[in-house]
Length: 349
Ligand SMILES: [Mn+2]
Image (cartoon, protein in one colour):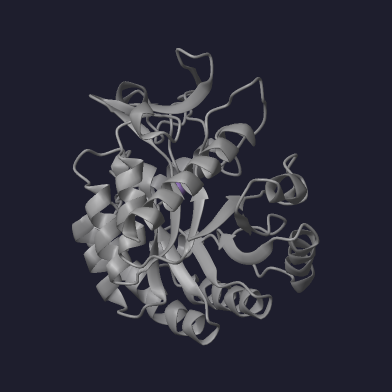
């Protein structure tokens, strides 16, 4: 297990030097943020990230994310141009020493939550998803002034309605076909660059606004891995994204896909499942619905040797900043992951 931590680049108030002081820290997880989605990342921007990471004494080997342009997901004629740009990014990242690239294939909306600052009993705040609040939003109604946090602000309301309508005309099978087309071009390039591709599950792992969503459960992950049956075609096991549905047995999935050598990256976070939604919790097992030790042990006992990072944390101790990405609670999460891993190692001896 190589412990890692997400860093949002030079504008992030949390610096690589701070991250370096978390015990056991190995890698920075970052991305180039100064280029629109679908364009080629400059070698200068990649080198600047690498230098800042190197200077802090951390490894520069994981990217989250190289985002996939909507035209690729929609299967538009322009997709070949964007896929070639994607492959060029992989070549440049491979040259710079990147070994793992996280991405997702979610239509339009990346992660979806209804509130980013829900106040918990202990006074900390967290991200939540309440179904009734999602149901109250219709992205196709341009006169609606309702929005959800985390929506891509680069879309105008009209553009958002248009792209949602395009996806509504697609079936899940169409999306599968577009994913396969993408993988068949990208995975051979990743393999030649010694990069493991790690798709992130849809978050949450069900359809929203009638949009197709396919990276959601064990059956679909099995199908995904067979689309291109190459070890470089792997997954990011995001425990919170899969674990917000009680239908997913995250411990079983961790064991199974680790044994297959197809988990390259793990996002460790806990989540409390509610009858109609979920609340993100502290990393500790008893704070949510997931058995975090059983997940860590399943990974360990099945030979997992990839990257792990604490995922979203609560906001605690008065910290402000990017919701879910404060320093304090993620650092607590990292310390907890260290403890879980040490216990799994010693139990196995
Ligand atoms: Mn995640």
